[in-house]
Every structure is written in C-alpha cells, then in structure tokens.
Amino acid sequence: MPSPRVAVIIEDDVDIRSLISAVLRGSGFDVHTASGGLEGVEKVREHHPVLTTLDVSMPGIDGFETARRIRVFSDTRIVMVTARADEEHARLGREAGADDYLTKPFRPRDLRARVDALLAGRLDD
Image 1 (spheres, rainbow, N blue to C red):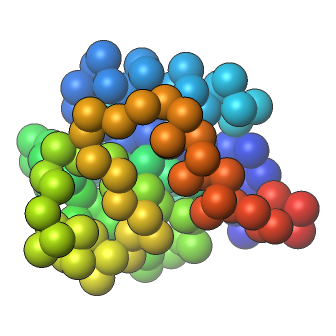
Image 2 (cartoon, rainbow, N blue to C red):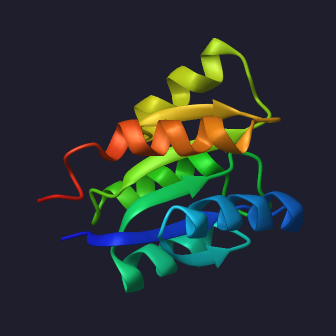
C-alpha cells in the first residue's frame, strides 16, 4: 500500500531532479530521488510512494521499461515528465503504466496542479 505524502523522483538530469524535488517538498512530500531506472525501481520498492515522477530518456533502462517494472508490484501514481512531447510517446507512456504525462519545460505550478488532480481523494484514504 502506498505511503501518503511520499514521492520518488526518477530523473537523470540533476537540475530537473532538484526542481521536481523542491516542488514536491513544498507541497509536503517526503521525497526520495534516483538518477536512473533500476535505482528508481528499487526506491519505489523500498519507500512505497503514493507518487512517482519518471523521465523517459535515461541511461540504462528507459522510462517506459521502468514504469512497466514498477507496475508489477506497485500502484503508485506515475507522472512521466519528459521532453518527448508527441502523442505517440504519451500513448506509449500510458500503455507502460503512467497515469499522466507532462512535457518539459514545465512550470512548477503546472506540476503541482497535475499532482493535486491525480491524487485528489487518494491521500485521504
């Protein structure tokens, strides 16, 4: 079962990882980060987050495969945050298990709004 107000950020770009961390911490999340897919899968397994943000283009396994591996054992809400803006990648993300898809660059308030909408009601469970 996911832990309320726990998030895992899987992002290889340190600046974007820091930005997402700041946004989520500002929204009251306990944040854990990973710079790659395999590490991220283990962080999700260890911390049972209610929310996971995930980049698509990462070294090693990509975000699609990372999402598929997470879905085997977790129902964390997955938001793919990626520079790939075309509909095909959004479709592939959802097929891999993502709940939402946000393109870079993004405004912090847009990320916050999407997270709030995605988790509405769930954190009260």
